[in-house]
Image (cartoon, rainbow, N blue to C red; front, side, top):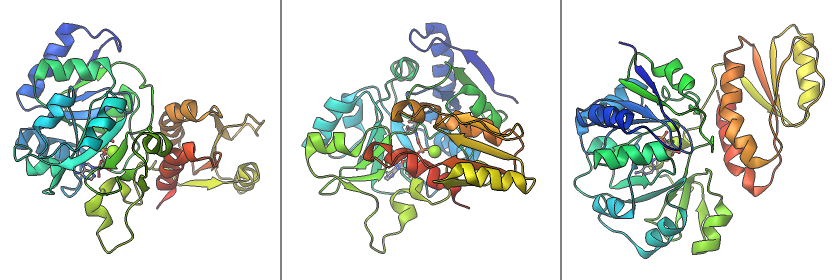
Length: 331
Ligand code: TXA
Ligand code: MG
């Protein structure tokens, strides 16, 4: 059965709509809802069967743990075994917000959430709808991005429906999300803490607060997939082959001359031949991030042979954008 879609005001969500969503979650169902990063596919995080439903709907491998959303720091502390001082400082500064902390899990967290691992990833989302749901439910909500596994993340309700319409109970449509890229995942069980997935909170902001922060996975034999499966090379990918170029203009002309239907994603407006589908994103990083997935969804739906992306600037604050584009290009 197709998911029900309910419009909801992003700043002042209607209590009746939130109550419907909470009732579905309480009964073990699946609700897609907006956060400030991307739309999440939510289930009661303390109900193993409900969480199994997330994995079934997404076609997500059971080895890839999901993020748990909580209402506030006190709720976070209830589902972890240890709450180090560094977690307190980070949470105080960045919650609600797009920072996910990996901590030792409490026994009450089902294996389905953590992929059987000893840690749980959690954050307080900075979105009135997500917070209202958490308040109404009074249990933590497990929610990976609301897309089929390995596909592009959703920043609008339409994106959710495109891949999950027949597999979930309800979508709360609050319009486009503001951040547009996923949260930064930070493992605070290690010294120094380590970024497992770059995201909307920049490395520099973390270091400014807590000092040294490592980036990326340790280059040991430790299985990359088990540590942070979001780091699998192919992820967040459109169906259309995508390539990144420094001189994308020339590449676009070359492919078009071969008779290919080409999409061009740039951050500089330039005139193109009429049969190239061009999307121009802002050259400023937060604006670019906010629109990136919507642009990729748009190009992916245009029936193209190839998507060519002009390489964004190289500064540190562009790390998460580069990370997602690299994955989108991986085959
Ligand atoms: O912005 C976001 O984080 C969005 C919104 C909905 O909150 N959620 C999201 O979830 O992107 P998901 O499941 O698509 O990505 C979760 C990432 C994955 O890379 C996963 O491997 C990692 O977090 N992760 C989850 N639990 C983990 C754990 N216990 N240890 C290490 N990595 C974990
Ligand atoms: Mg995801």
